Image (cartoon, rainbow, N blue to C red; front, side, top):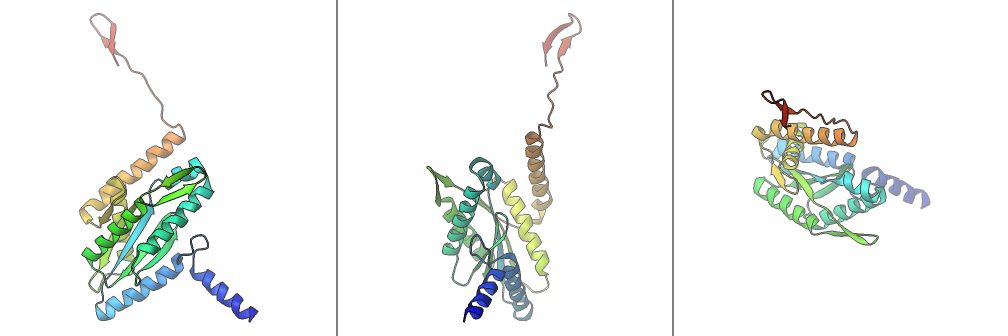
Amino acid sequence: IVVMRLVRRLEHLSHHDALTGLLNRRAIEYLLDREDQRLQRFGDPYAVLLIDVDHFKRINDRLGHAAGDAVLCAVARTLQLKAREVDRVARYGGEEFCVLLPHTVHEGAMQAAERLREAVQHTAIPWNDELISVSVSTGVACAAAPGETLQSLLSRADEALYQAKAAGRNIFQLFEPALASDARRRYELQNDLRRAIARTEFEVNYQPLVDIRTMEVCGA
């Protein structure tokens, strides 16, 4: 009996995230693959949400990693509570979550994304003497017709997530090809600027404007 319990425990751990208790990346990728096979064989549509906690690094930097863990657990509980019974919620990595929506097309996926976004926004997370409020950005991609690879679908969801972050965060974004490259460039530029500021890589140079008739400084 002890051995059987140990085996079940190990099997559970191999498919679930140790911190949040959600499915882990390995488990959700297996389920995504199964859903993709149903699409290819029977035409059953499905959708994917990639959800990222906004400004998560700020929480870790200001309050510590234990507070960050508490935020991840609270977001995980909220997503699991507000998802449908048929949906599957997983921690995809770091502060990113993945939600699989079977039998769902664009309108249903956008409704789900907004429902989850709003639920997280209204979740107050107690930490010491304060309440932490967080928001999430969500990338939405739908697989409605056979032919597209699963990797391509996940790439579209990832690009849509970039678009949501570039648009200001705390929103969901359905993948739009015309916005993809521009959104990624803006997001990467923002990250580069933050890193440069943190490393004090900026240098202020003062260049005066001189009136050549009087040789007096008249501006900068």
